[in-house]
Picture (cartoon, rainbow, N blue to C red):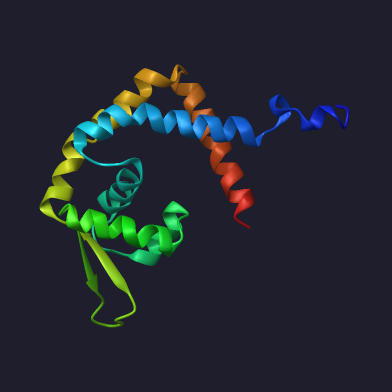
Length: 144
């Protein structure tokens, strides 16, 4: 590849990653709207459905979000009665997040979100698994 070709948009790795991220998130939107949540809230719920009571710092690490981004998101989710935020008895600096009944009940309809994505992205299950593996490899190599 010529040096000038490396500056073409079509040759950039970052652009298809950026565009795909935006468009995949957009594919989720109808199902998320039906659930009354946003995509970042859905990600938090996914973490909490795996482990009901968890420290904010663990959520931050799992979602690759800074606390200054995560804290307002969690406050909104608490206002929506999806989660509880409580200070740890052992260390007041630690905030523990747990699901409310409303947050737990959303899991029942969460399969709709995945079905919406599968119906809209236009790749096979094998291709999706390959892409998932490559993206995780990329994330691990970047997070050194």
